[in-house]
Every structure is written in structure tokens, then in C-alpha cells.
Length: 148
Image 1 (cartoon, rainbow, N blue to C red):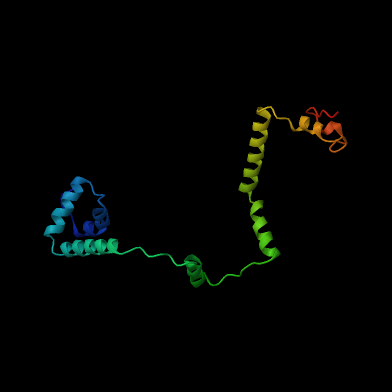
Image 2: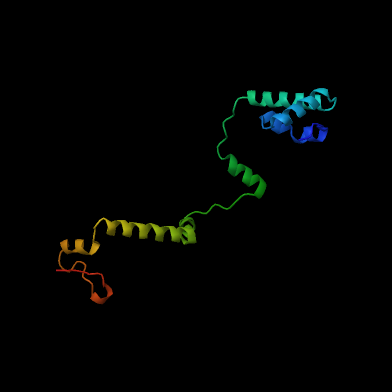
């Protein structure tokens, strides 16, 4: 690290100095330059005072719908979708691949855990009344559909 600190370095690293992110050697070089330079001393003093005054200000509550107001002013007003179009737009999100993969993964995980715990959906159907759920084609159920 060079000990010759320049005014350009002071300007570019001023925020790091104020945030306390400079290494000890950089901090010593920064302080040596900032205290002796006629141009940098007022800059460092004014920016540090400004930062102290900003931190002293109370936090303001965010107005409601601030984000939407900013978007309307910058991008223009948007059309509001109502009725069936809104419902269809909401269901449109389910056609995204990540939702489909997530749903398939969740269903697979549920089936694996249910099977590992010893639960059998097909054996639990025998408690239903006769004819409630009987497969018409037994060859479609090769995993032991056992109806009585």
C-alpha cells in the first residue's frame, strides 16, 4: 500500500472511510492526507457532518401505495383487471414451469412419505361401501388393488 494518498483516492474512498471499512494502513494514509490537504479537509468535514445530521433525522413512515404511485408516475397508469380476467390472470401463474415442477415434487414427496409410513390408499378403500370406487379396468392398477 502506498503512503502517498491523493485527492482522487480521498474522494473515491470517502464513503469507505466514513463507514469504517478502510484497512489500518489505508486509514493512516487517508487521515494524513485529509488533515494536511487544503482541498480534502473541508470535503471530509462537510460530508461527515452531513452524514451525522442525516442519521440524526427521525425515520418517516412510508406513505401507503408509495411504490404504486412511483410506478404510475414513471411508467404511466396501468389497467386494472377485474372480474373473470383477474381470476384467469391469477390462475395463469400456475402454468409456470417452476410451479408445475414444485407441485410435482410436492406430490411425489407426499406419496413417498405416505408409502414409507405404511399407508396404503388402495387398502383404505375397502372400508367404503360396495361399488363406491371400483375400477372398471383392473389391469390399470398393477399395484395390488384389493377390493372385497
